[in-house]
Length: 582
Image 1: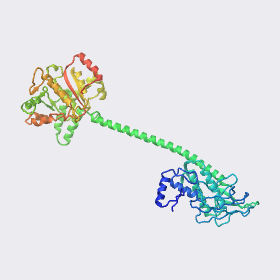
Image 2: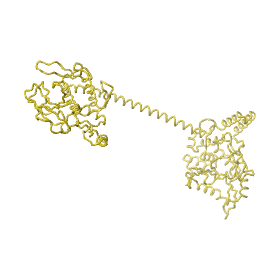
Image 3: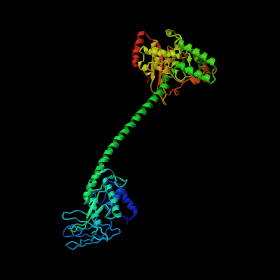
Image 4: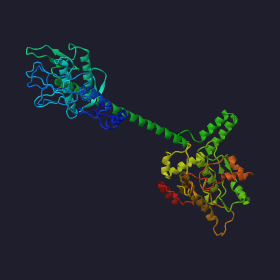
């Protein structure tokens, strides 16, 4: 039957042996059954048993113990108060015989072992008060063989070592390249080297050296040579203490190296963290540059530079002749110098066309139209960023037609002039938070503007306006039905005063509201004036399901401001709070 190499338990089959190893030794803490060694792996424990307890085995054999009445220096005899000792002795390929000293004054008594006792309860070579009991593993050679005393000394050394506390570290073998985590396992490994040397060489060159006999009749004195230096000792215990000094010095060296490794690891970690911080800073700077470029704050030029680049590109592609390029450039410079929009993207007469369309169309219960307004589309100089400026131009085109807003500039300003008007409003103290966002500069940039900048300009022009913030969806699917309801109430409230039932189409005198969304090119808006009005109206109309952005802001004009009201609004704009719905 298979026998466990660790606990010597006999198992009926190999399958049960594997289960026993898994449950008893691999999943649990592996402990030596012969000594106090524990906390090592299965392979290290097997190596330990095969080296430290090679003389002990789980098979039951007969052992011989010799009892002597007196202690003599030239006897290889074990003295004990007891005349018998039961133990398990390894009997691989050898026989156990009785051993007695030929010079003893008493007759050696050979006692056979009658029963087998567990090695866990009766460890070999246990010291007693009156003497030492020693199990002798003999061969057919004479009892005066020095190798027996050498093995006996090693067993005592192993018992002393295994009873001491475990020392952790990294210990290198002085005789090969092996590195052990435990100094005791290294000692076992070194003893294997010594056994190999003893087996391969005679007493003349071996580690254990036999000295000539003295006049007192000794059979021989054994010398133990240190495997790490040239010193030799008369006893194995002295050698063990000497070797432990080597190992302790090696442990201190390992501790010093460990401290240096820890310092190096911390330095490497700090360098890695510094690299990570630098990479994060670079990424943040790149993201910030992308945002600046997206919102036109990257100092890449404003309306004029973009117009010139687009015209140059058209010339290089053959879409424009050089003469036309110079003519358009001169017209652009003249328009920029005057501060008035050149009107190339303007479409007029839209309200009249819509009135005629809805008058003849079916399927509409009521239609409210704002006052006459011109539509301004983006051009080559502001494509991609000028929608806010164009919406402001449309609002001004409607206010210019109303009697109460005659104090406003007669002409519609160009986009660079609108940028200058916003900067002038900031200079008067309006919206300081928004001014700091743009670094108090809009001219020469492609920066986007929104409701707060339009409110600041209108306030600086003494126009009374308010901002309504629809800051979150109010309907299913992230829609804004409250926004549509507010717009309806804005146009229908003043138009239906005094009337019981409003007409189907109402042309109000209210200016348009400022609400940004995707714009349309001039040629598309001019389709409203042609016979294809129905198709264009379907594209322009917005339904509740079309506006699904999370937030919308509306600017509504409500009259003029007195100088006191203007000053008050400028001061209050430092903490500008829009009317929030809901």
